[in-house]
Image (cartoon, rainbow, N blue to C red; front, side, top):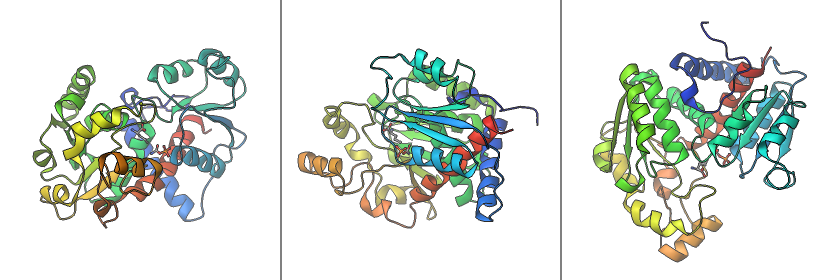
Length: 332
Ligand code: CP
Ligand code: NVA
């Protein structure tokens, strides 16, 4: 193997080559098969890892905890409240404390700069989501795409619909560019990716033979794709007041049956990192219904609950892919 991931941080996909990302996805598939067959080998015995969550989580926290437990590591969870972080102690000081106690640190929070700072203190740091990137989610998504179609990753086409500046759109675009995929993004002009990142991705795409197309025409963008992907229209940490503006901009970008049909691909699948607003069953879903009359926001209930929806397979793969990251960066 011409690379070594041991002791490496996992902060954003831009830090990794196509070979390294492919290795992590293949390792996740192997670890998944080993667990299913009852053959799991523990490679993290005696390791201690800390999970810092400045924002809430269901999947990412659970994935780290189960993956660590399966592999023999112990986990400490530090939530959005209950520690000195940010109140009485800076992240830099916190990092210097935790790096002396733990073998690795997971961080979910706001600015990418914080996780990059954490990553400078001698133990591997894993990004569990920042405002800018969500790289462990993309590993799970790529594994799920591979599992649901016969094609190689570089032959797969997918379209992201929604806020093109959000952590999911940007991370998927970076991943697709590095892996040479056919990536389309459909978003209104106001919500398209930042021009510096787009330029970087175009450069990577050129080198890797990827196809990137960014525009506002959703029907054109989805033609012939294997997967349609969306995310919430308002991300964690954004003020509630932005809902009205987002709904104004994205109101016609809901993934519904018509858009799935517009692909012309009877086998097209629907993807979402979750949590998703697909009905009124949540507090926010109900509030949005009361205020704006939307029953289902970024995706219709019909598509979310259809056989084309593979969102829970993505969620399950969070654990296997995070396990691969832990084993590759921390395993002996
Ligand atoms: N997809 C994802 O990161 O989910 P959580 O916010 O539940 O961790
Ligand atoms: N864009 C979403 C992703 C959640 C997994 C958020 O940051 O809230």
